[in-house]
Structures are given as structure tokens and as C-alpha cells.
Image (cartoon, rainbow, N blue to C red):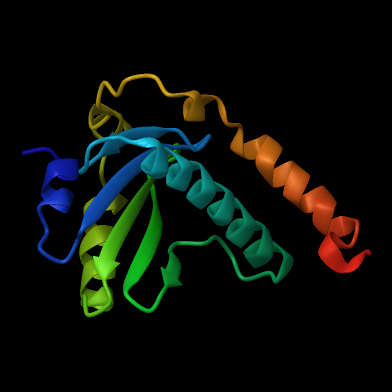
Length: 150
């Protein structure tokens, strides 16, 4: 069983996605579809925003991005130097236990083993979405006042 299959089989994880550093979905525990591909790009952009914020505040590198909703948690963690692991967990999941487990699993995982988890997913137009372009457009929009202008 690969490390990604092991993570996907965890009873506290509903969905696992592996995305590359440009926001393309490379592996999924669910069938690849447009919503999961859009989510991959959007979560990579959110991670870039979190990294920028942490840098501006002088707080070091982001190790975990957590988004909590009324029903679930979304966790984003770096997996090596060029991938991100995205997990959807139920609201009642033991987050500290999951974080510790995942940190230990990922900290010494060789890049080749991370990359080997990539699945041969069919092409999607969402693969062409540039997270860098999206992030730059958002940054420019915010610098120009966002939606504060009439």
C-alpha cells in the first residue's frame, strides 16, 4: 500500500487530494471531477496567500492550513518540496492526532515516493488554470482596493 493509499484509508479522512505546486490535481481518493480540480487550484491559491501572510507577519513557514466549516475541516499540508496534501475530514475528527500522524508520515518521505503517488488522471481544462496568475490577479485587485470602490 502506498503512503497516499494509507492516508486515504484513514477512517477520519473523507477525501484526500494530492496537488502539485501549480495547483494541478495529481492524485485523488475519489473519482477526479471538475469540483475536485477546481478545489485543488483554489486550495493552492489559499496556501500561497497563507504563506504570504505568514511571511508578512514574520511567523515562519506555514506547516498546516486549516479551514473549518460547520460540517467539516479542510487541511492543507506540504508534501515534500513540490506537492500539497489536501484532506477533508468530518467536524468531529481528532485534528491534533491527524496532524501528528501526517507530520510524521510526510517529514521523511522521499520526493520520489511522493511523486510516485501521482495517478494517470485524464486531462481536464482545469489543468490549464494558473494558480500564479489567479494569485497575482487577486493581489492586484486587493492592492487596488478590492470591492471598496463603487
